[in-house]
Length: 316
Image (tube, rainbow, N blue to C red):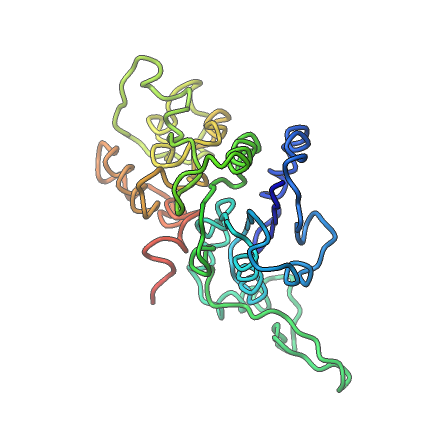
């Protein structure tokens, strides 16, 4: 019986649902799997329950979500202490994810926007969240500390494996869980992946249609009209990062005319997803002047991976 623990850190809960979406498949593996902790979204357990477990008593721990608060850092450290194998599960845990875009701003800028500048905010006393607050002179209330930047899991604790996706597709999650149960895992530090890029499994790939790739002659946004049915989105001018992104999702986004944005994580051997994406797109442009037409390059190429990149955050 394999003991499994699951922790949601600074995520949205979508990765949790990717496990729940296994449905009957999850039921099939349950006889071999004991879920001893799943907080805070699914099971009615408390952090103290995990803290009370013996060290290294849990076979596998899945952590989804990035680390932004002191509470999240504390619990990821507890997970590392209790779990023999720890997996950064999903784009946020593995790379920083969409929340990692906050690293383009300082903590002070974020608080200014959230608690003062928004149209609907009424805050005449200038109140902002504090880690401690005394109520009625005798009741002390506490909040976690809001750190100055977002961090992926491996910048906080040692991580054994990584799984990409926002969220990971449930069919691949099933494969990963079975691989864990059967002990068929790659070397520690690896991504659990089929090893193919989105382009390799995309039906729009010209190579799968007997054609050849062509250079990009225009840059379009998704609001500029629908691409031609079956044509490569990149060659149609829609910046698609499928060439450098793991394709464990089955290229679902391109199937519905949405360019790949890189949530699957880097293909094996790539250390900085954003840099490789920039290189791949730059080498595909017919004219270097097209670079100026790419909207918000940082938010395009580092949408899911800024905290894990060599940039890490905005440098002033």
